[in-house]
Image 1 (cartoon, rainbow, N blue to C red):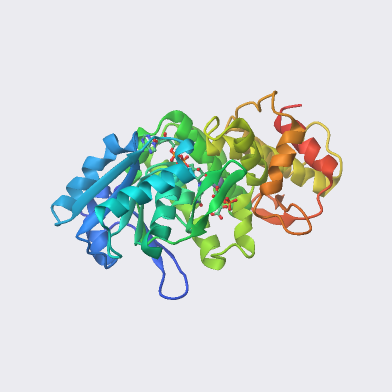
Image 2 (image 1 turned 90 degrees about the vertical axis):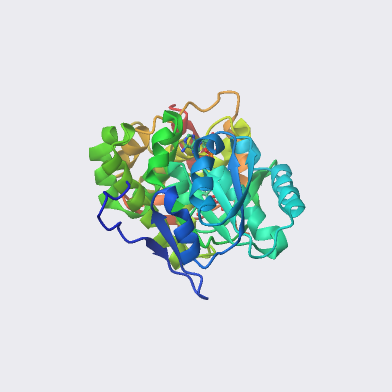
Length: 376
Ligand SMILES: NC(=O)c1ccc[n+]([C@@H]2O[C@H](COP(=O)([O-])OP(=O)(O)OC[C@H]3O[C@@H](n4cnc5c(N)ncnc54)[C@H](O)[C@@H]3O)[C@@H](O)[C@H]2O)c1
Ligand SMILES: O=C(O)C(=O)C[C@@H](O)[C@H](O)[C@H](O)COP(=O)(O)O
Ligand SMILES: [Zn+2]
């Protein structure tokens, strides 16, 4: 939420990283972009904006206005909106465009949009001239609480989700809360899936507030949505600062994703939103958590998993396509990046607000989790 005139905006969250790579996550209007670039030591004068064909018409003028007066020379590229743009082909297209413009290592890449633009532009920034300065300007809930923070960049491959990419941290993140007001309802709900994920794995107090304030969130009450987005982003900031390269607890951010990424691949990238697939995946993962805690689970889940399940149900995940078999989905999970030589690893809940990794998960528990996600 923008700070009222005359008041001091709340301090930014800082992702603390070794090697002088700390960066801030600002919740501030896009109009403040030139100041944040200056304060981060970025001077240009040229800036490359990568956006998509939906977000560009909504917010590119605001970015141009913010930068134009401060002497920046802005070049912009809009890719088609949607998950299909997270492809090797689009990544290569961004490289072609940037190299044609004759960029140098002082040219920042500004990713204006949701997680698709952030992951794609971030990977282009990571690979152009072996690294151009990257700034995220996230405009979806998913991007403001999750994808713009933490440095995972990349694109999808037919073999699996996000299989081509790099860890590459931004110089800063500038999330304008006002941009969330133009999100379609489907995308708002989709973004709340990652919010619910952050709450379930690490923040029991946030679970309680989500349960209490859900209707106001769906109504986009600025104060309620603004606070929830900040708190969910804070979970990500903390996890990334503790484990940048996912050698330990960062894997917990993958709650619901082992199942969810398989759903995205089997449905065809873009058929479901990432958040919808993660919501379905969390339904399966909550069931798996209950199975591992209490053996075979029939009917209503035992406490505390019933509570986690009820929160996930508020996301109203779509039905899993009956034409896609559970075996196909289980096969698709084999490309998961958390896999080790011992097999798949799943993120499960021990309690609401507490998660862990589970190995050696029995095949029948996975099959039962898929059936539960289908509502069987
Ligand atoms: N890197 C990470 O850590 C990370 C974390 C979570 C998700 N992701 C990735 O992010 C992607 C999903 O992100 P997403 O949900 O933001 O998808 P997205 O970028 O496709 O955006 C969703 C839709 O909303 C539109 N849109 C964006 N901002 C808007 C606004 N303010 N007003 C109106 N329309 C707007 C977009 O054009 C698009 O059609 C997935 O590819 C997922 O794998 C990455
Ligand atoms: O930042 C992370 O770490 C996450 O796992 C966040 C996830 O929400 C996100 O979807 C991520 O891209 C998944 O990562 P992957 O390594 O499993 O592809
Ligand atoms: Zn995700």
